[in-house]
Amino acid sequence: MKLAKQIFDIGYFFRALQVQMRFGDLSRAPLQLLRLELKGKCAECEWIARGADDWDEVIPVHVSESHISTQALKDAIDVREMLFGSLPGVDTALLRVFRQSAAGSRELIITGTVARDQPPAGHVTSLAMRAKLLGLQFTLADGFLESVQSEEYAMTF
Image 1: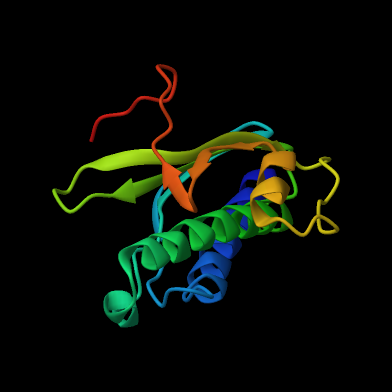
Image 2: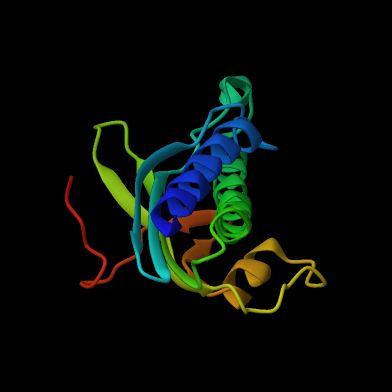
């Protein structure tokens, strides 16, 4: 019975991700889930950040890149909430967000181990600070998410 409940919860997470994360606030592109793995009370979830919206072609590049980065941070916070809301048996999760390059390679831009019992940071107005307080690690320079440079998280696709 426990396995059936876990399978149901996983299905609920996928459906919720597909419906609720279909469009972002700053991009109409859907999230591309790469991997979800459950290991007891821990989960690992990886996805590709949304690209620029087609309408961003007419705005300056730095503004478009800022929109992409802001959307990626918001999505990471939302996926965390959705994951813990959908999978009651999960207490911690390792999240990894990749950016797809024009050449087709992926680079890690956000990572972190987040916990269910982490107090919400909703009172913090800065999106980047809320993400940091939840346990996400990233480097934001001039509104642009840089690659995470860490041996531990280096991945080649």
